[in-house]
Image (cartoon, rainbow, N blue to C red; front, side, top):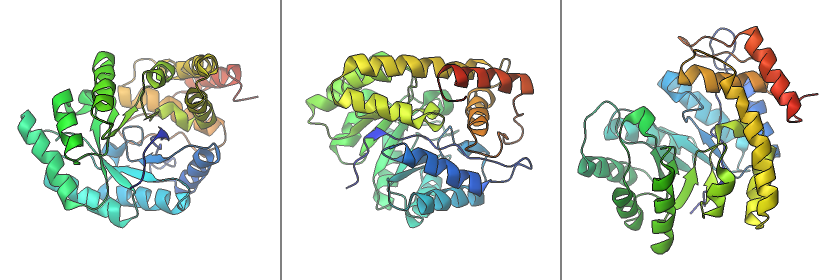
Length: 305
């Protein structure tokens, strides 16, 4: 079975100025990430703006990332949808396209209790032939995946891992400890951008930081320092990445989807990785002033001359 450890960036979805998929820029972004030494790619996550894509666009993105990755790293695919049967349809298409695993949230819109959420994951896992990673992101799905449920699903072989974007640091520490005590039945990954040095120290198996689209080499350096037990170097690199993360605070008065991801896209355009920083409608692109301020931060951390 594929092991999901290390740095696994949630790949952005480049668009052109007409709002269409920019597949050449997607190719360039995949090459940018793989060349930096990342350990995997996560297609169609929150940073990939999966909620704004049609099913046809989702299929194009997955097929292109898998094709471009060409087996160099595993590709896991987000399957966000309303309920289990719809998630299964997304997951089957991802598997057919060559995904190494799928990432599954709790149901959306539907009002389910804990037992029903558990059956949701069991239904998906039983219907496909690739590993399932649970995605704990209550800010988007309004359901927190509790520790007892995650451990039950892991012990039963339903999920191979969890990507934690809950923002619950105490809960994350408890999850890492419970997983270790149970013999590590699953991989535990964090979606943090600026706390990964400490998160790796407490025993997490890797990170899925959106900012790694911009500076994948920095996150690979951080991970490798942590793996070597060089916590001084890990902290130093995390401090530099925290300064880079200031780009997400440049746009003011924007939605969560528009500000942070817009900053990542603007940075990739400034670095010449992607041709455009275009956002999907109804989100608006960042202003020229925002882009200029982001360029200054890129220069300050050594990414832009």
